[in-house]
Structure formats: C-alpha cells, structure tokens
Image 1 (cartoon, rainbow, N blue to C red):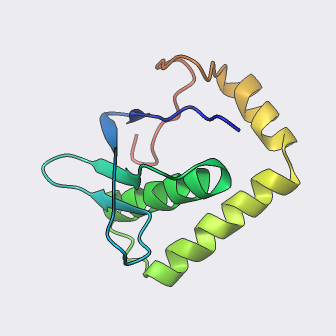
Image 2: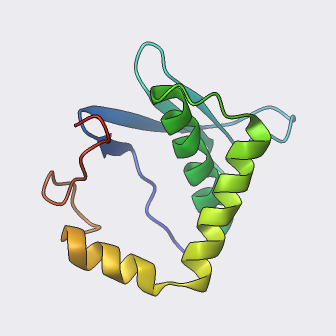
Length: 119
C-alpha cells in the first residue's frame, strides 16, 4: 500500500518538520529532536503500519518533551501501541474526528485545529 509521506505536522504554534533518512543497525526506526526546532526523522524505508506506528511514537516523544511529562521509553511505547489498537479496532473514531474538525487530509489548514491545554 502506498502512503503519503508527511514532511510537516502542524501543532499550533509550532511546525514539526519530518525528514527521512537511513538509521544505523541499532533497530531504531525514528528519532525526535527539539533543538533548534522540533524535528522528527524517520527511517526512509518504513512503510504501512510500521511507518504510522513510528510516526505516532515520535509524536508522543514530542508531546512528552513539550509538556515536560518525563515519560520513560516504555511508557511512550505503551501509549503508542494503545493509540494504534484504539484506531485499528475502532476506525469510526477517525471518521468522527474528520467530521468534527473538518479535516481534509490532503491539505494543511488551521481550520479544525485543537487548542492546547494551556490555551
């Protein structure tokens, strides 16, 4: 299955740049860095569920960093797997989100953005 490779994710007021490249042989599929700006790098060969799972994992790393949650890697992995299980077992959740936030998955827009808890 061919999937869209994201290059940026909007999280008001930040943009998280997404890059693709090779990783070493340490079984690492992705990484998150906050400096000098939020960046996610994903293994360029990832596809399908592994791509999406790794992207979700790195986004949780980003949230963990922004809010200073100090989650451990095992906690981030538990959240990643739990989110994926919820989505795969209940695909209607995505339909509800698209309807509520008026998402057009082909275009980035501030319409439908969600305020952060500090907003």
